Image (cartoon, rainbow, N blue to C red; front, top):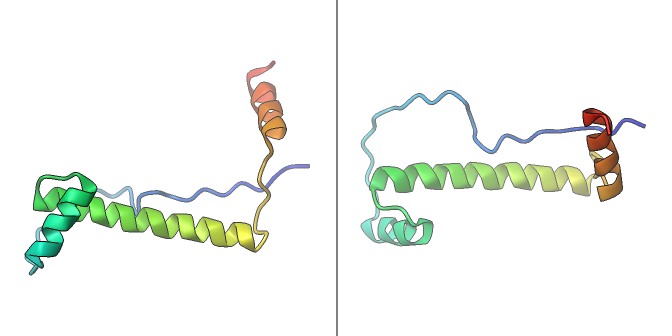
Length: 89
């Protein structure tokens, strides 16, 4: 029986278009976010925070699908069999 396979992008887009913008930021929140994320610059902090939020949303959607029985999870034996079949042994 073929299992359903779903992919969940961890990045919202593969289009790496950069847009320059000007925003007002809470300096205290920015400094806490830098410390939490381990980033040094405002740009890196904002971009890392955006990627983190998008990744968390994708993981939440995946968890929701699992809870709804949206797809089957392979057990380790099934995964090993598929890998062996793919590489011929």
